[in-house]
Length: 220
Ligand code: Z5A
Image (tube, rainbow, N blue to C red; front, top):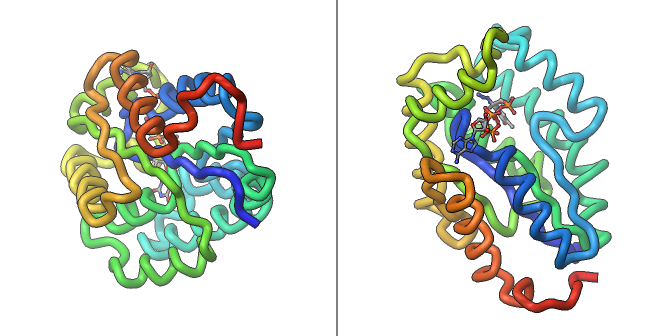
């Protein structure tokens, strides 16, 4: 039985997802018994192996649908071994990227067709849906500049190396997802200072789960 809460973080490169997950996890740990922080692609040994293959560009020749299948294989392992058990224990699960990234990245630039991705998503998730999704929105130029500064001399990975028009399309895709699913998604202006973004995320959590504002530890 599912008792926990599932929050996903989505958005373009350098939007600040990892930074904000750390901050939200710290805020939640004061209030809930268990917080699980995880990421995609990855989160299990098997899924991390697939992550290395995909981000090195070794699966690129399979095309967008082939890459979507690999991301989904990694996701099934992640859901089965980490996410579903954590939700069953009553944990808050915070995940850096999830199924919306497949919709956006593999669907961008006329890649995999939306209806094929939707079918794949239904099979892959098998009912494990996020309760809340933060779409960290930032102009791709600004996000790429942040990520480039952090990367320094390291080579760009499979997706970082795509051009600006690809990243602009991703932004549109994420905003379309938020428009289509307003109950689940909150678009957060991620161009602001870190503290302001963190405050916006926290207030969205309080709006969704008002009892998080009480002093007592909960979600036993
Ligand atoms: N992918 C896919 O195609 N299909 C899928 O189904 C899935 C994924 C699940 C995974 O990359 C790639 O896989 C991803 C999509 C694809 N491709 N890309 N690109 P990843 O996990 O390695 O990278 P990422 O998800 O794109 O994250 P990122 O580039 O590491 O960015 P981030 O986590 O959003 O940002 P950050 O690390 O928190 O911050 C970046 C820098 O900005 C850092 O130096 C911070 O200190 C700084 N920062 C953060 N916030 C701020 C603010 N507010 N102001 C100023 N500076 C800030």
